[in-house]
Amino acid sequence: MKPIPVSEQRAFVDRLAQACGGAYSPETRRKYYISGPQWAAAYEGHALFHAPTRTPVGFEEVIREYGKIGIAHWATHDTDVIPTAALGNDQQTEIVDRIKKSLAENGLACSMVTTETFHHAVWAASPAAESPEVRQYAAWRLSNTVGIGHELGAQFAVYWPGSLGYFVQGAIEETQTLRWYAEGLNAACEADIEIAKKYGRPTLKHCMEAKPFEPQAEILLPTSDAMLAFIASGLLKHPDMVGLNPEYLHELMWGGAPRAALARALVAGKLFHFDINDGYRLKHDVDIAVGLVNPLDWLNVLVLLRSHNYNGPFNLDYKPPRTTSNHGVFSVSFPTAVDRFITLWEMAGEVIADPIIHDATEALKAGGGPVENPHDVEAITASNRELLTLHELIAHRLVQILIGQHRGRTYSV
Ligand code: XLS
Ligand code: MG
Ligand code: MG
Image 1 (cartoon, rainbow, N blue to C red):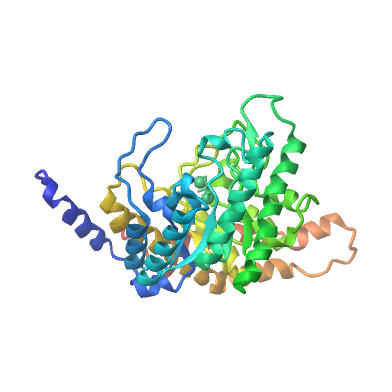
Image 2 (image 1 turned 45 degrees about the vertical axis):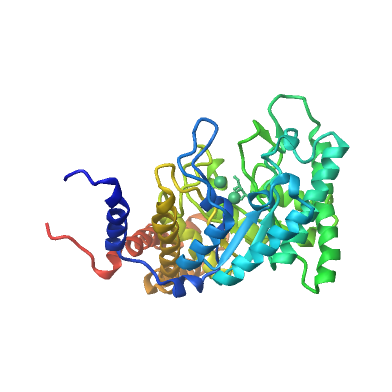
């Protein structure tokens, strides 16, 4: 192939993206509770050892582009859009008004707000640091975000505690730090009760998000399960207001099965919000877009959520790769992520309705019938021995559905 001149590269990429097919219309995409975070689209490709590869984009552009794609909800950290020094003053009011206008003009709603308690130097020792001034400031920041959430019409507030942990042993006392962390959440819930009254709105759903490592060496609440225990620990004044925002990759990172983590959140009634992305086990928080690494697992995750009527947001918390251009973020990265999600979600419906999977799972539950002596271990083992082969058949069927083989896709050899 001849070199593609710079002036023709966008058109070339757009033509191939178009040729991929399998895209949904913006109207169809809007029917799903999919949210696009400000920080995901505005991510410039930087990291500790990585220089930015993209130029900054502000919320007006992100909201406009999400609107064009058909991403109907938007989420943000306070400092993604408001400079830290401007928080709580007139500039905050002015920016929040501009956000409201931008959302309305582009047909989006704000679903979630979250407080940045990890990036600024003030959080070096976490938002539950020893210094009472840091903790007071943290409580104020969380409450201020709740206020922004109500002003923007959000339903959820997310808490990723970032540096809640330590690099060096013995530097902090874990039980004390957890108590202090609870105080921050308590302040946010109390503020919410007051602010919600003023706005005549229901209180927000407060969602804790775990990540097992990064940025600290040892994390106090590394998993969604740890957070469930924390919510039930008695340290929270309003545990009913607090649930989880599991992130798919964050569960995979510690070696867990995301679907099992979600199941534990579901049985506890705490699956409020869900950050969707993909990546690898026991590795860095690579935040790859949904379905690019583990599509089969993703299909299974969505089968679980569909069959339990999960109706919270699917938040596209991923990072377009450093190789993707500013244009590519909105022309390739976000639309393809949304379309893979929708296809996997609809496919999950197909799995639930599939007669083979249905018959197999029902047969496994029916078993081989009662045995004469209910303590006869050999008879119990033998009674459904043949039926157990269905486990593997179910797995095969799921892969068939994923790759279209169930529709008779074969190759002539
Ligand atoms: C970081 C988290 C973050 C939260 C919101 O790893 O995923 O993006 O979702 O602070
Ligand atoms: Mg996240
Ligand atoms: Mg992540």
